[in-house]
Length: 335
Image (cartoon, rainbow, N blue to C red; front, side):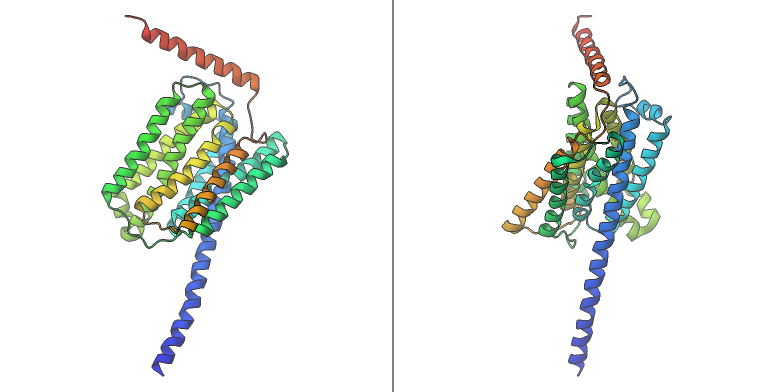
């Protein structure tokens, strides 16, 4: 009789666990999509405000943020972005980063939705193709990879190693971007910002775990907390510089593609995230990630995304590139 009772109680507990897991996945899904919506709207408003400024010497400087703070549209975009980051932080505290990051990549869909109201462009075949690729890629990666926890979080050494690699690659991209024309510079700056934002998401989850285990005291004693704030400021400067330098289509696709890939890599590298590693699962996961990247690029290149006046962009690029060439000549001249 005891065995039967035990079997019945165990059988009853399994549906409860299944329902709890389903509710948790649904919660993460809603939080992730909500965060993506706010981020996409925020990026469009920020770029639309930043393109009103003539590119100047304040790029890659905090002075650029001081100039943008005078514009209400930019402040509204920042409010949307902060709201999206708060929702993404909550999603990361509930679900695995390998599940949340693909959902955040859908911010480009909401960015295009707002951009369509500005440019009055229809989606067309290329737009719908990008939407289909992005949605299919997110679904394919989540279903085939089945992101779960349960792994052991790596020690401080691996944290610092991954941190150094990502930060080093971002710094290299910024140094290369300074030597390129403005359009190419915007893409590399956004790519560097995407790397930092992916790292920030991973560190945000680590900081959230510290808070759950030790409260505010442990959170304030963790270096991850201050790294999240520092990366947020640096990423914001990079993104706004990219938005100021070129149209949104030159920056947002790189930003949107780099962030989830970096976040997933960090989650597997030092957060203990687990993905299916069978040959078939790896093939489908790779295909899903490829669809996400191709969908992001297709949507990002769509005419519906807001663009600055071609003449203004060309004149600004010419002035900026001429100034850089003159500065190089002066540096090469003997004293």
